Length: 172
Image 1 (cartoon, rainbow, N blue to C red):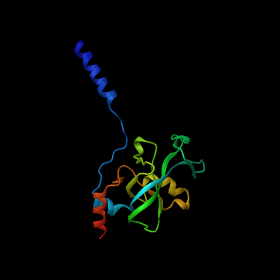
Image 2: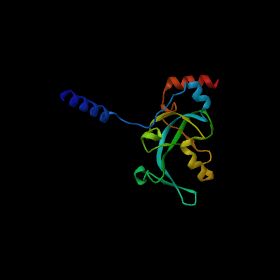
Image 3: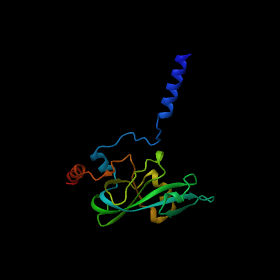
Image 4: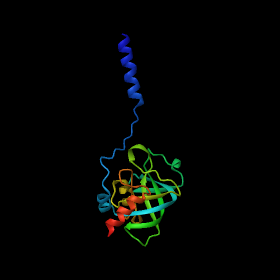
């Protein structure tokens, strides 16, 4: 009886202490592979963070709403994305003439694998045009057709000077 009670408590402890996170990245690619597959690679400083919500209408169309706060949106009504504006420091791949670059990432937490950017921090970003994360946004309006997306399953990270040097060598 005492042994069964100990087993039960141990099982409950194990089950309740497990932290679930639905975001699972199968593999993070090498620098070479990620650079090759990304549409846009840059280092930049976060200058603005906004949030957008995509709501599906009954007629099949979607509407996009923007806010400075994620708390304004109900994540159960539609997809919420963080809209991150960067001042580009160095563009390694993509449109080099753009000083300001907007990149979207998930913001609902957990399963959307969104990358959590901090205002005024510098990052190395690997971004993609045709991501599942921005499909609804691209389908919505013409201005979103070239939308860039990144998440935690890419090599996006706080600026890493060693990785930047390797990228510079790849460009040559």
